[in-house]
Amino acid sequence: MDLYHHHYHYIKTKKINIMPSIPLPNLSPNGSSSFSPNLPPKVQITSEMMKNFKVFTCDCGGKLFHSGMIIKIISPLLSPSGKEEQFPIEVLICNSCGKVPNAINNQLQNILPEDVLAKSSNILL
Image 1 (tube, one colour):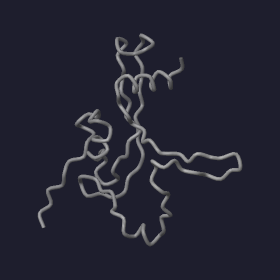
Image 2 (cartoon, helix red, strand yellow):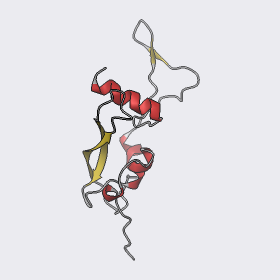
Image 3 (tube, helix red, strand yellow):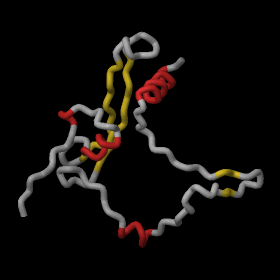
Image 4 (cartoon, helix red, strand yellow):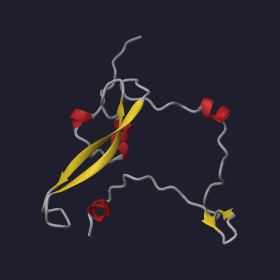
C-alpha cells in the first residue's frame, strides 16, 4: 500500500474529513448531464453575484492568503505500516499575520497546533 493510501486509510479510520465532498453530475452516454432529485439545482454564478459575496477574513482581519503545508507525524503504533509516517495537511496561511485562520482549524476538527493559529485582533475603533 503506497503512502497516499496509508493517509487515506488513516483519515477514514479516524473519521477526519479534510476534503470537501462535491456532488458530481451523472453523465449520460450522449454527454448531457442530469442531476438526481436530491441534489440542489446548479446555479450560474455571475460577476454581479460575486460582488455581493462575503470575503473570508482571518482572525487578524487579513483577507489575502497563500497555501501552506502542516505535516503531522503518525506514530508507528497508529500507522497501518507499523512505521512512523508523515501526514501532510494543506492549509491556508494569512499573508498579514502568517498564521492559519481558526475557521480552517475548525473545518479540520481542531487538529492543528495552537502556535500556528491566528489570534483575534483586539483593535478598538
